[in-house]
Image (cartoon, rainbow, N blue to C red; front, side, top):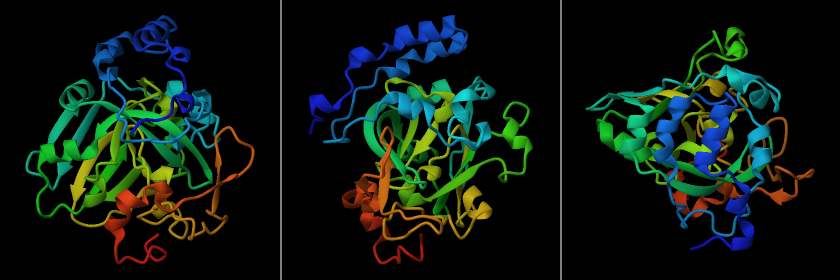
Length: 303
């Protein structure tokens, strides 16, 4: 299955990976040691994902973000991107597993084959985009640490660095940011740990250097700048569940039939468009792949 040529942003309009690294280092926006991770962006696009999708212009995705550690306005994460320190970076995987480990980012990328997948992404606020993510299946990493029979859920913890992330000095949220999935959701082949976007390393405002992408759930489920992954037995209380339990449930699947308490979810606005001109699809259009995970569940009760 191939995406139509006229629906893909021509690669000629992007900087090549090496040209981009040189430009960023020269501008002082990227520390030179990151050049050692150049191998991570030789991934080929997986044609099984994104058939018929039209890519959102990269400028919209890079400049319109939710990342409360960097500010609450949509423009704040880009403007404050230099707050986020990404070197060195380690991801700890622990809890209910036989082989807990700490992975340096470069070691993790060597272990996991990187590929590019085009996914539709939807925010709970009603905007959406389609973008090519470079990453690897989370399930590959979890199998490496061998979850025990007690592991039922997976918790993702984002960076906690109030010295540099100034919003973490406020009581806006219960820091550090945490999210969670059921283990079978985490092991699903669609669930991705992303390290790149539009053929480049993740930008700080998009969750550098490694983040979760769960395309059938609302965007806030995709934790950014992950430093720790824990396998646990009981359903965790995640950051948004604690902040606003009436508005944000644990599952947070895209469901146009369950409105947010303050707005409808029936339609969405693709980034770059002024109007909500697209009908929202159940499970964000991934029902064929994931609906079986929720067979027998009341999707209004378990929102």
